[in-house]
Image (cartoon, rainbow, N blue to C red):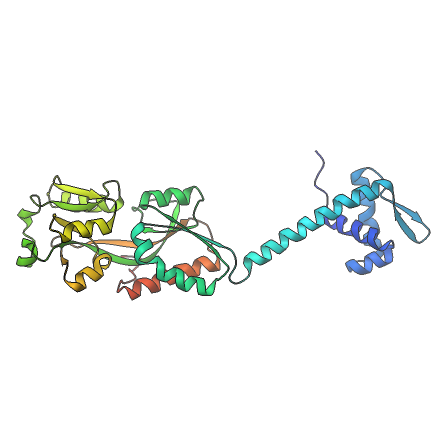
Length: 310
């Protein structure tokens, strides 16, 4: 298999075909006449036929040269289009942003982030893929999203880089008339008997909650699992059990008094949220801007950026 045609030789061929003169072609290309002559000879040797007839100082295309010129012009146009496309992509406000996020993040964090992002990158194509923690990591692995706003992956070797954005705490939320709300505390011995309303059993949050109570030797056997934090809040409001979620997700309900927040126990159950991307991948400027806007949006919600070593 012969090597790919040299683009410099194609440029020389095109210029010579257009100008009909080595001197003028060299001037257009900012080369010496000798350099153009060597490029044409190397190209003719490569393709195995004569492309030009030299008649005195004039240079005319052969029949093979005429046919080859049609292909050359098409190749050079494609190369210019490829370069122009890359230049457009790197201009401010262009490109694409593919982000994965949980439905909770989509509802409470992304609206503010995307509104600000759109002002800086008005022509950037944005695609959001909602899904739980595990789904987001799979989307990252498969190259279907570039960034994922997720909970921190478990410790250990990882194929992802994780940029911490904020830290929250999981707590009980109950209706104002619930016995725990009236007492202002949660009696440890009453937890197993209470109906707990928890997020999806396959989720990372459920595992965190389950592990937390297992350490306290509390068995989670009486619980309802739902795939929506909004549904959890609504069930708890009407008195069906105690929910477990982060207070920022129920900010308006806690402020209005329709829900009451109580600690899970003496130990706090904290989670770290952040933006994950494939390890070794350098973020584009637009992606770095997105990360920064996520930090700003979390600060507006009163959520603190965690210490990386925490």
